[in-house]
Image 1: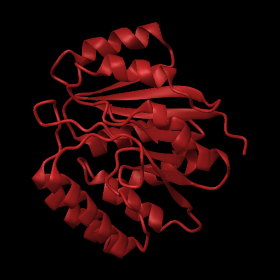
Image 2: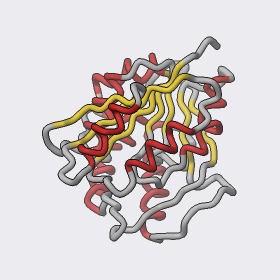
Image 3: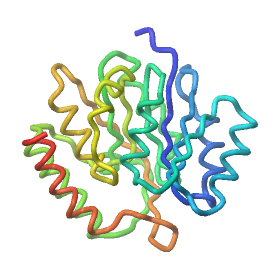
Image 4: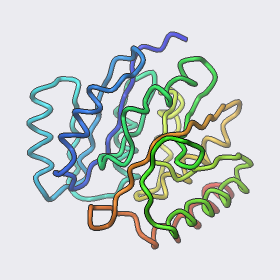
Length: 238
């Protein structure tokens, strides 16, 4: 396959503590020969994130920053980044260091080998290190994945993962139809992928360095409830 470039979409909201380190790791990460384009979508941050991103983008032309006027939500920020992407491959990287750029080769290999159109990084089928955290979050993730699988007829182990990679032309075709503004993006994009003819989805095991709410974790139980509605809606009615 003649794939030459990768767009790495990074949604950011009030991540001044981590964004320097995230960008540094992404720039240093092994993308198996693909030329990098970083698209950082600043989702209405109110801390010093905006200043940091402005400085970083002036130092490196590969970093493109999109500043949103207010906090619309992760889904909206990701959609914005996807629509601005140009890479043959598109990868979504959270800005909180829960997902490590060291795992890029694992995620990219099935696409570069011509086996996959999309790859999900699973936190649950791996022997790589992962931080031990919330029991009920784990159960909710597993239950939501099972519910999603029942509608999509996929056998994913981690639908809710924030580490997803796509063929660029595929995800840009789907991006204009994305409606979820917050964390409903995960079941929505999964539903849309499942409806695509001959779309090959792979999973690979990744490391996971989850953080606590005191450390800035933003997803909450309300998002879990909304995800149930998103699974039903995007699979049956949208």
